[in-house]
Length: 629
Image 1 (cartoon, rainbow, N blue to C red):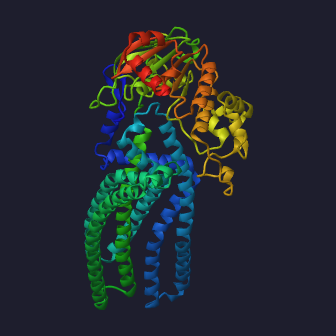
Image 2: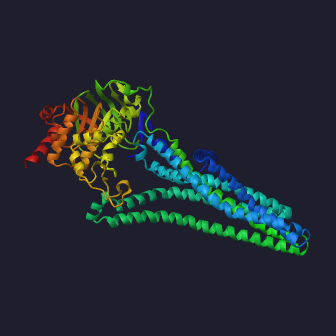
Image 3: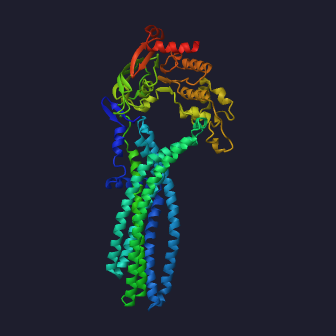
């Protein structure tokens, strides 16, 4: 699916904006760079202001120490070869103090940086997934481009924020160091100063170009990496292990994984070759300038134009300028890459809502329970402008307090209709009314609090049995009696009670409960998992609309009968929508609706539809014959 969704008739949001936002994804305009840098600095300051302040002080001190050492060394050498030896002790002590600072500052910087990185990373990840949780629909999660952006944003959130700040301080420190050494070099030879600085300009330009190439490469390999990780997860997944081994598909997935890895590696190697050629050339240029400068300084000293201290100062200044400029250029290149990652992070934080904002808020949770019913009025839907229509002018009324069944072939649009009722998407055209109120006028959280659902593709969480049920309402985590009641209603209590630790048993062979690595957890059958999913839905005791999407698929006949009896009790007096391929399970619904090709083709009671001798009658007869043979 393309991941586009509509705000209403003729309007779209979500995927289109995601695609526009991704344009020029490897570029970094100055305004974007400033915004990303500000965002990182603000996060760092809010996360650890004391550590950030300490890092600034350390960066300034670290930039000044080498320059001060060069000046003091010059003075010491001049005193040793001339007058003023009485001041040597003070100069020596000064050099000793600077040496001590030079030894300690990197460790202090590393400590403060690690603390800052952890604090800022935690806050950044918190903000990122707060933004992700704010996406009310599914469009973002079904958009591959947004998935790539989200993956890069996750990398930025967990690692990049602190690195952006550290890189910024490195750039500032490098600039201070360059200025200090340039001043020292200028005192000795203005001409050589100009030559050394001029030689650094090509390095700056080349490194920035390399940085842009690295950023382009990182974006290009992002999809390949995501697919590689997907194949890795399949090869190591318990869920996939049975089929992969039964059908001997392991080598197939391994080949796919390695192909994606080779694609990414080929892209990296192209960048590395460019870096090798460029940086080797720059190294030769730097060596030529440094060697030429040293020859000039020695000749000048021989002619008496420079003292021994001046030569020492000159050598230190040339090496210092080149080293500081090289570090500065490297920091700029690294900073450019980090800011590109921050750009993706900020883009996720600032992404437009994937569902249209409520227009004229109608707080549904303040209205009385659903009475009149739910109406779909001329609803059209497709997942993208280039995709086929899934629903075509659907008009359907679900009266309050009644059970309506939705049946049809695979691909008829049943699951899509459920997604629209849950407002995972908005209709492309048309409207869905809840007691005459368009659900787009309702806060999505308020709408979903009034729904209960059991989905065909329910989740099996690597959590304890109690936690698996409590996902239906996390407030029940501290209420064991409530969890047990829901499990009993779903017929799951006896199963859970027989587990080694009851409701505290980890239902996973991936994680151990409470970190107890000797506790391998327990595995359930498909039918047992289905009852847990049902218990999860039963935690919500007062839904106005109950949606049951194939709630008994995969069960044996006895279990299916038991489930439907429990569901019949649960939905008694409630408005419910039941979807099932097993027509015997829906025959007692008040009304049965047949969906075909995205349109409603038949509607009526079980008896009425049999009399019509249409699609429903044909499907029912086929299934009944299957049982009688």
